[in-house]
Image 1 (cartoon, rainbow, N blue to C red):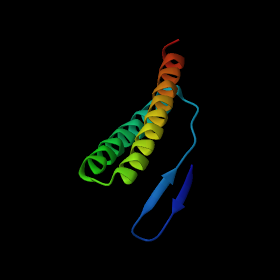
Image 2 (cartoon, rainbow, N blue to C red):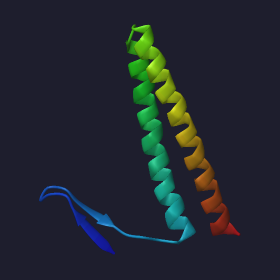
Image 3 (cartoon, rainbow, N blue to C red):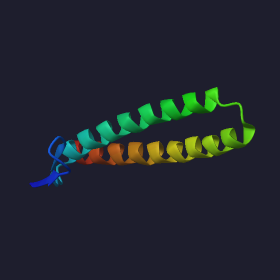
Image 4 (cartoon, rainbow, N blue to C red):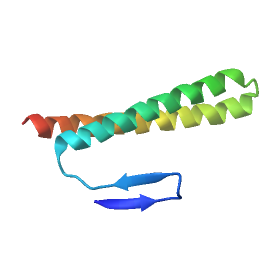
Length: 84
């Protein structure tokens, strides 16, 4: 296990795994964070009236949709490995 220290207040434990259930759990957490981020981005898009900025934000939303889709596919693959 590797320990990454960013400063005295924030320490992160960094470890590697090949266990499908642990991978699935990490992917679920990442997916939840991305979904929260998508909600915040959509709310920002909704509050801005500038059409040019809205178009850029919509591009960001679409990119985030692709990211979420890929994360979900990875989660499904990991779960399949865990239960096969």
